[in-house]
Image 1 (cartoon, each protein chain N blue to C red):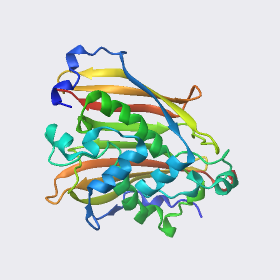
Image 2 (cartoon, each protein chain N blue to C red):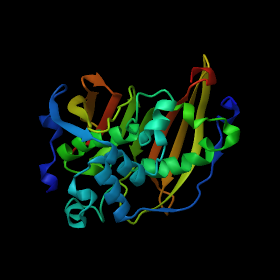
Image 3 (cartoon, rainbow over the protein chains, first blue to last red):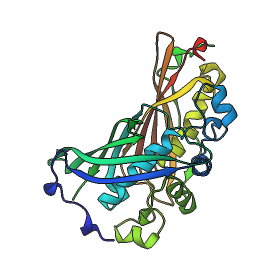
Image 4 (cartoon, helix red, strand yellow):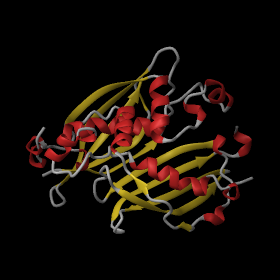
Length: 144
Length: 150
């Protein structure tokens, strides 16, 4: 992997799709994220607690979904440090069944280009069974 | 107990140093499916000009949520976590986070608002390095549902 592999700003157009990925998430994945992040809220691993607070069942950490989605951008841009800003709203929970898994679809497109700043805004459409789970998910990447 | 709006504008000074380790970055990267080799392979990171492995873009949440705990876990703040929904999150990276970084984080309660019983709480973590130079800003908003809306 070399820095030369980074996409060039001049080659991008607003609306262009740059990457897509489908990501599977199961309960074991959520337990792993809980440990790695330190977020042990039981609604992300305990069915009894999740249903007692009115959820359909255990749901993914919003921060897991946010983190998994931006990996698509990191792989496309070629350097994690190129992501200088990343934001989202959490619009819909992601129920994670047991047994089984949920399937998260991520499509990354160019939302805006700023030639003066040398940055591109990459907009992420993140959906589960066609419904958006993140809103205004935008990563600003610095390109050479 | 309702969310206490008088906490808006409060600031908490930086606490303990958080030392970023290669193994914590590996754990976090693997948990989020962040497979780029610069997160886990020192040689790959150095080939990109980094001094050590690089954190995924949302890794700073680990540091931010620890820091936010001194406010959101304070009983006086009135934030009942069984009624909390994460509304939004934003990371602004002033420079990359690398393994070996020694970071300190100041916490600011930027806003506590209430409308129709729903409370919105916005916190901002300012993460700096050993020299006090800015590393990342993490802004997070929680929505707290009213008690009769369980």
